[in-house]
Length: 549
Image (cartoon, rainbow, N blue to C red):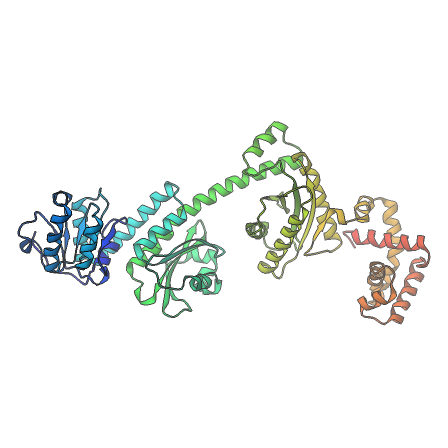
């Protein structure tokens, strides 16, 4: 074959990245990046090598020619090609270790393509790269998309797809979810960059380009990828949002030395993000189907509308062990115009991701979140309390201006007990809302007398008693802008201890004594008499429960 003039600077590394199959391996050679390629030649025989090959030619060696040679006969052929200063040899069969060692000594790169690679196609792809690098790079990007899409259909998973991109680009590749949690990372063997420091920077939301921090804005952006310099010396990244539906579901980054990010890396991050979008959309669909199944199961079970056989059928499909002990928790926003319950559900799931105990989470009736967490044993309520603390911390972190109310109950030793502990957790949450206990998880067993009073508050005689005793204090506070109700509440909370009550209210002891005298006068209850003190305390608790106070 005749040689053609070169069209731009192309080296062996470029041929590997842009023209040859992704599975092609380097079997020998010292530094492919510095081996310039001017043209590609298919060797037709071992005769007259100087007439077939010239300096900087990449030699394609058909399997038929390789099969005719033993290692002993192959060595002088390698020597002859090395003396011609060819760029390297592309083979389609593996070589022996002895041959690889000799080729490395001669500084002659040996590339081994998969056996099913077409010689004609390899020759065409390399020649196209030498003639038009831009078009070859674009085609490589489309080929990558097709490969990744096929991997997704075969359910090979995000980590395997990430490895393919890293092998193609020779750079660090990272896939993150919407919270910037790393779902997969692939680091080339030749990497010299500080991976730990890079990961630390990638998990900081402020390091994202501003438009990508808003997931809906990222989906609407016309730009497909962004290039930026990380706050690490000479380290850059190309990042593309992984878009599914109307928002970004995650982010794909290709990271390397800032001056080495090139057109292929841009193609890889753009087409890779499109392929990962398919994978994440598929995972989202599976997640939504599981969520719908959980919802049908829980709402039917808790409402008592599921027949026993249907309960058992749905429970067997939940991918969750329902025969073990469980605790129940209910959570809701305090403000009516707070963020959506779906966002609260996301925060709960995030807290669960590092909790170590399995749980079912459901937005119940569009009014609150219910959680059934598996316990290690019947006496393992500590793990449920720990989950409550994690949820509170996560909500405070994500929604610092919002408050929640929460209730808990358990354990339930069987599925039949789930409705009971759910109703108890719900009652605890509702009582905590009325008692204005916010950003705490109130356990049903800690409610004490409030559990009884909650059943009595709507009785007319009880409401009249509450009005008669507490009403004068409320009216007095409103007229004089005073705090008698707060004072008597603190008095009972400190078991009648004058010094502790005064300290908690930040008032002088004499001021407290004066207020207690006014309270006794207005209510007609003598705090020195046990029955009257109990009556006043009960009236106060009943008033605290009222939703119209």
